Every structure is written in structure tokens, then in C-alpha cells.
Length: 410
Image (cartoon, rainbow, N blue to C red; front, side, top):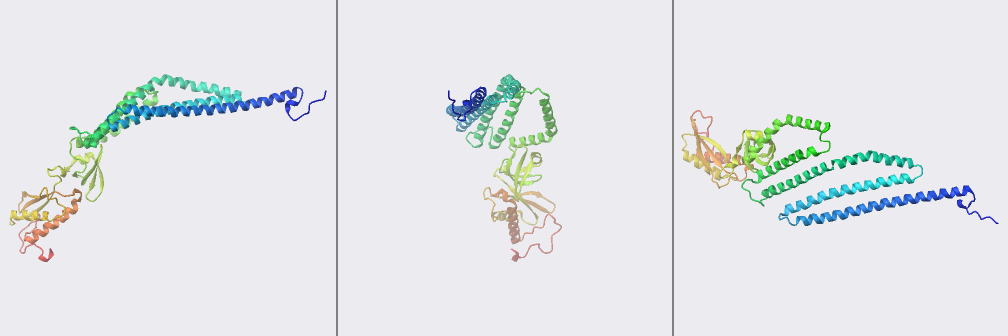
């Protein structure tokens, strides 16, 4: 019987060698096919997880919007929908990440098991995976109730924080009227409420944190307490001084005040310091203890900001004439508001002269320095034109010639 022609295929050869070669080829094709199937399975798993993740996020977004429609307040409705959607997105992303890592681990194990010569590596990887990951999984499952409590505490703290912010921001923006709070006290109370809410949340949730009873947590607690005790003296002093200024309504943004470090317009009031814009357009930040020590608020008068300048005139000048000259100088000075009208009062009867004080209200309190310069020029012009001498406070005796500049000087 004639033999078959040899076309180069290994299984065409007869005998045991040909069978072994054919079996090797089949094994290689089987390995490649298994790798392809595993890779396609991983891709399919990732695609399914991704599609499920998108579907869940869209559904949660719809549910959050529907649940928030029953809330009357527009700001609170937006906050509630956004907060619920954020929490849902965090949970969905964590779950999808866990599923992706699980799929990659299974794919890697099966791939190592399918490749020739890596069976032992696959078994070692599988054993190591279960040996090292399983305790963490059981630990996580054991701590899951405590983590649920921590998540609930965080959720309720965020809700309380958002409600508090919504209420006080509504007062600040004028949407809600309150007899207890104004814009400044509402902002301060909002910050204090935020701090208090999160401190209470940390105190409640701390015992439920995994490892809260360990030596590391105790060391961090001791270190935090030590740092707080060392730096709390000055901090508490600043804080209490700020509360007394804010809730005592001693000063407000826009007030013109004088402190031990200077004077200016209050721009911002914080919990520990306030900012002043001086007449030289300098922004100065002062601690509340410095502000509260020597504070003069010129804006708390009945008519608003009231400035004063003094002049001392001898007894030989009629006081009615002095008063009229000061009022005329104030009326001729640009930048002084006509309402309330400037006024003059005699503050002291000294040994050799009378001390007069001119009270006036500026149109712009920040322009105090240039306004005083113009007013002093107008006072000198009026007194010199009327022949009234300004010789005080260093008054010794009546001069032989009047101390008045020549008429050409003004």
C-alpha cells in the first residue's frame, strides 16, 4: 500500500513522535484559546461593571432630584439634591472599584493557571491572595457595623451643617428677618455652629473608628491635647475678645474706629482679628485684644461718623464770633456733610484761653486726613480775615502787635 505524502504537518507523521507533536500543538492552541477567552471575559466583566455603574448613577441622580422637589427652599433643595447625589456617587464608585479589582484578581489567577509552567505560581498567588486578603476582608466585615455608624454620623453632621448654613446665609442675604441676629452675628454664629457640629460629630464617631483603642490613636490624642493646651491661652483670649466685640455690637464693617495701633474703616471682622483700612489706604490686621483695649467708634453717634477738631482762643475774643467763624469754615470746606449740621461747643475754660471743639460729619470717613487739612486751612483763613488771633495753647501774654498774617496772605 503506497504511503501518504508528507505535507509538513506534524500529525502527518506516523508513530509515537507524530502523536506527541500533534498533542503539543493542540495544547498550545488550547492555551491560546483559553487566554483569549479569559481576556474577553475580563473585558466583558469590565464593560458590564461600567454600564451598571452608569445606570446606577443616572438612577440615583433621578431619585435625588425627585426627592428634593418637595423642599420649598430653593437653596436647600439644591443642597439636598447635590448632597444625596454625592454620597450615592461615592458609594457606587467604591462598589464598582471593588468589582473591578475582583475581576482583575480572578483573571490573573486563571491566566497564570492556563500558562504552561506557571501552575505553581498560580497556586501560590491564589493561596497568598486568600491568606492575606481574607483576614482584611473578615476584619472589614467585622468593622462594617461600626463603619455604618460612622457614615451615618457623617451624613447627619453634613445635613445639620447644610441646614445651619442655609439658615444663617438667608439672614445674611436678607431673605430671612431675625430679631436675634444681624449680618455680622449671623456670619459668626454660622462659623461657630459649623465648628460645634463637627466637634460633636468627631466625639460621637471616634469610638466607632477601627483601631480607635490602639496605642497609635492614643498617642495622637495625647499630642493633639498637648498642642491645644500650649496654644490655647492666647487663642482663647483672642476668641473671647472677638465674641464680646461682635455680639456686643461694638463695631461693624464700615465703622470708622480708633484703636491703640491707629484708626481707619473696619473692613472685616473675624473670630480672632479684624482688618482696618487706614486713611493712608493701608490695610492693617489687628488682634481682637488690641482692638478691645482702647477702642473709639466714631460711627456710633446719632448722626453717624462724627469727627472733631479743637482750637483755643483767648478770652478777649467773643465766643459767639469764634463759633460763627468755626461754622463758616466748616461750611466752606468740601467733604463735610451738611446733615447733620456741624456744631461748636466749649469743652474747657483754661487759665488763659477757651477751648472750642468743632464737630462735623464727613461724607467719606476714609478721607479724614485730607478733610482735616482742608478744614484747618479754612479755619485759619476765616480767623485771620476776622482779625482773631490763634495763639494757644502756648499762650504767655498779649503781644504788642497782633499775630495775624498780612491780608495778601489769604
